[in-house]
Length: 130
Image 1 (cartoon, one colour):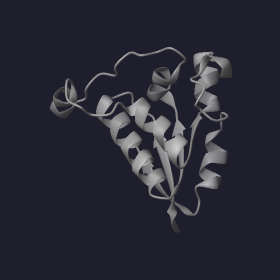
Image 2 (cartoon, one colour):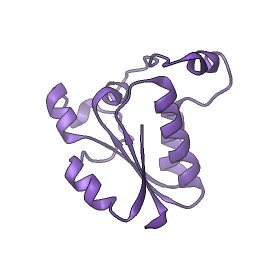
Image 3 (tube, rainbow, N blue to C red):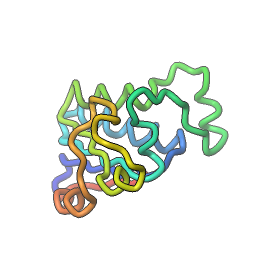
Image 4 (spheres, rainbow, N blue to C red):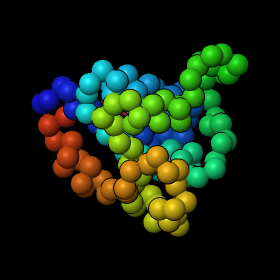
């Protein structure tokens, strides 16, 4: 396993999970790691172009973050891309199920990938799932 390669699978639409995935991506990327994020299922709607909805809190910590100076998960992912070697890929299957075309996604997202390709590329990486 190559510890400098971080792969993150995000399927949850819960605030805390989206936030932690973005924090790992951001810190990992600015620390010199190669980071790839795979967005699918309940996470996908939060990356549709122009969607600024706040995801629901899963528990009390998510509620505590409201009103604090916590950088939003979308900002952290954009910083990971801009400041390091990070890419955020939407899941092609989730896009098909949702009826979403690539131009409906946020412009900072990379090309859609299937799970098979993502997992193949992740075979020698540390993998996180949220």
